Amino acid sequence: PVSALIHAATMVAAGVYLVARCAPLYAQAPLASGVVAGIGVITAFLAATMALVQNAVKKILAYSTLSQLCVMGAALGAGATVAGMFHLITHACFKALLFLGSGALIIASHSNDIWRMGGLRKALPFTHFAFLTGCLALAGVFPFAGFWSKDEILAGLTHQPILLGLLMFSAFLTAFYVGRLYIIALQGHIRGHEEPSEFAGPGRRP
Image (cartoon, rainbow, N blue to C red; front, top):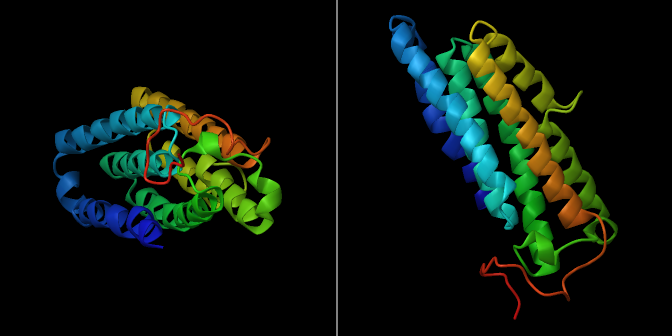
């Protein structure tokens, strides 16, 4: 619950809300707005690439939070304040769902490493349904909430084609790493008895 609160709402809301409240000031400084949008898009892309190579379920979600935070920042920098705040709300909902579900996965498998999970779909049917819902929303699959908010943000960047293309590619990477997380952790067979990967988190079994 603490991770869900911090990563889904509290930590994200502070900076995004501050920038949104300063929107009238940014409107008077187009160069500053462009810098905010550029940094947001580039950091969203870099955080998405980092999430691709993580093995700890909470690290994947943490880098995802950073990426989505920068997506909101890019929207605010591009002048799409409503779209950025809309994504703030939708992200709080589905990311809280993912963090609560990840806690259930970690407790069930006694590990934070996705390669020590697997086959949890049958063991945790309710958690599987909730986690899958969060994954689809984060990936921006229609008709889940993430689709609508990301679509509004992309629409707000149509006048900046380079940033738009990079943000669209970041959205694709988001769908890729969240799909990787879901398939490895919840599908297939239980791999808890196999050799652990290189992740050495507190939940790693000897």
